Length: 115
Length: 114
Image (cartoon, rainbow over all chains, first blue to last red):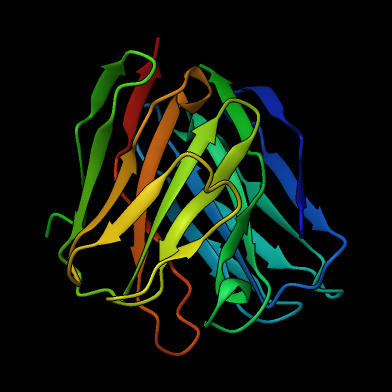
């Protein structure tokens, strides 16, 4: 089945630094989503991308839907301690309906921020 | 709004015991999902229910059963727990009309099978 390759697996950065992570796939996706998971909680949606080339921001977060539709990246600018968590990318292959409409998740990027 | 509510939060079972994880959503979503999360494996889909009255297998369904009790509730049952089922389980829901793909998650159930 489809797989998402998310990198890096983990990052240790200093407060104030910028962060970049990405997901790639051998398959084309119609939708890319980025989630953040904090300890003891479920993932929470950060950004949703619907069109190839789309660039969307949410505060200090910026994500882009790759032109080839096979990749996406998430940038966090001027990181702060509360950015700590695991960030997941997720892609949807087809339109909603049947298994093709289900989300496929990357394995996550664990972010640690040193004050 | 409570969103997606899962119970219990923590559970310890002995091998061979059975249990049911409960999930309810109050967002009037049509679709509901059960995922498991293991270190380094991300989120893997166990079962899903695209609408009330239907259920389908996901990526890792073996050892599990589900019941879509009504539009709000979707339960996951382990009939005979095994140590390999030690994991964190998440229930999720979303609207199914159009291409609204946004998935909302519960806070998880941490299950240990000894």
